[in-house]
Amino acid sequence: MIVADEPAIQQAATSLRGAGTEVEALQADLATTEGVDKMYAAAKGRAVDALLANAGRGLGHAFLDQDFKKAKRVIDTNVTGTVYLIHKVGNDMRRRNAGKILITGSIAGFIPGSFQAVYNGTKAFLNSFSFALREELKDTKVTVTCLMPGATETEFFKRAEMMDTEVGTTEKDDPAEVANNGFEAMMKGEGDIVSGFKNKVQSAAANVTPAGVLASQHRKMAKPGSAKK
Ligand SMILES: NC(=O)c1ccc[n+]([C@@H]2O[C@H](COP(=O)([O-])OP(=O)(O)OC[C@H]3O[C@@H](n4cnc5c(N)ncnc54)[C@H](OP(=O)(O)O)[C@@H]3O)[C@@H](O)[C@H]2O)c1
Image 1: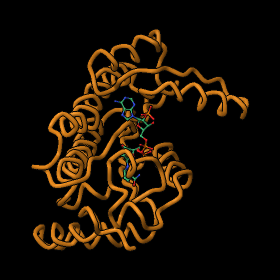
Image 2: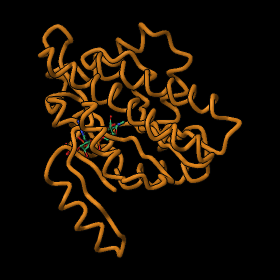
Image 3: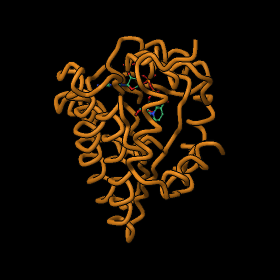
């Protein structure tokens, strides 16, 4: 079952079916409890082997200049909807003592994201939450894996209104490769996977760099107008 909040999810299902897979597409707003309930109900009580909690969105610009409704939607999608979904499906997995959960965090979670402050905060939440839940489930056969990508070539930066920034306009990672890395780590039951060598170095450096320095570095790539002409 694949879920998104736009009708284009049906086209995604059609192309995935081309690979000979049975695919059910569902349009649901996972930023809301109603949307998560709709998705849960659509599974009709079938045992979920793997939950890939990936839906998320970003939002650029200085926090005080952001439309608060959009900022709240980032939190509702990335944090509230995601943890509600994991709470529902995770309880079923624990009862069955089987299942795999993949949470898409981000290396952004290691960096205070000036000019993307709310988004980076939500990813810091998810990175932390993922490791905590994994520890709580360590005596069960349910595994929790956190995928932490770096900047990846998707619709993300356009939707986050960041196409005038350096990070929005420079070359990014291949989304299929990132997804594959996450999937493989989930199947192996690993705790986390930072996709790509450059991102591994960046996340390791972030762990030993003062937060104020990281926030100042983030400004250079995320401030509106920072795109290289
Ligand atoms: N791209 C990057 O550089 C990057 C880096 C690190 C982490 N990530 C994370 O990777 C995940 C996927 O993002 P992406 O890069 O693939 O961006 P994307 O191209 O914008 O895709 C986001 C996906 O999430 C779905 N989604 C968003 N809000 C939703 C909602 N309320 N209900 C249901 N589905 C919703 C979207 O569905 P619709 O298309 O129907 O809206 C879409 O399938 C996110 O969690 C993001 O934070 C991205």
